Image (tube, rainbow, N blue to C red; front, side, top):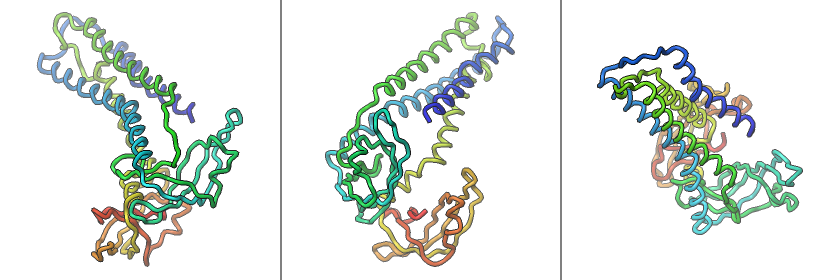
Amino acid sequence: MKFMIIFWTLYMLFFCIPFPIFIYMTISEMTTEPRNTLAVSYVYLGFSLLIWIYVLTFLINHLLIKTFKEKNTISRIVQNGIPREAEITDYKLVKYNPGTHINLIHIVLSFKNLSDTLIRHEMMFYDTKPQEKRFDVGKTVKVLLNPDTSREPYFILSGAQTKFKVINMIMRIVFVVFMIAYIIGLYSYFYLRESFDFGWRFLTFMHPIIFSGVMFLLTLLVYKLIVGKFVKNKKEERILFAGRNAQAQIISVSQTGLTVNDQPQIMFQVSFKDYKGIEHIAVCKKIITLLDLSSVPKQGTIEIMYDENDPKKITIPGF
């Protein structure tokens, strides 16, 4: 997994950094005349600055700031978290490291959420003491729920300790510093090389100052798209940990036409009454695996969970 992450990171960096510069140096002819008017050059300059500011903000937020925020959130959960007893209903050994005797495990927990509704949740983590068999099926563990569902994580195992991996943090800081140096160097080098006292009038869309930024922007957009498809919906997670359950009557079940990894997206339209007795009609879209497709109910009732503050927002925890 680490090898694939490193490979794809280097692969994308190639198309974002040396590739635009190589293409430009190959096809562009050196000229001492301005390529654009002053107004157009400032439009290109402003456009490039907006792209690079967004790229740097995204990287700093996701590589550094977000990590510190999550650590602070976990610290608050340790101090103010709501305790629950969780039963382990499933256990799978994902990977065993014979050198450190640490297991990467996948378990399913069953516990009551913030609204005292019984839920099931999957999680994967490293078990540092596998010899104690703390996570065998049928055993119980203590969890702490995050009372603030606007922040992740929504819960932690009681007694969990958080610390930064020094190597990972150093690599992240080095990468951010490298990106800042690269951007400054990009502007400085080409300005000294091509301005010829005409300012920024050498800029074109295919110039590395702009095109390299566009490639980074496209890479980040693809990353967000992939993460959005393969990472569980945050809205559904919030409903799961803070919502109430209800029996809903199925109105219709249909395919939306969207597929993710050949797995179809199914749209459920249901009607239900909230805990106040008020009836609602809501829609929920779920990606269903081909193995589970035959078990999707087409009529009758189905168990849902809904947002107490906005009952139109629902999730179907069974899929």
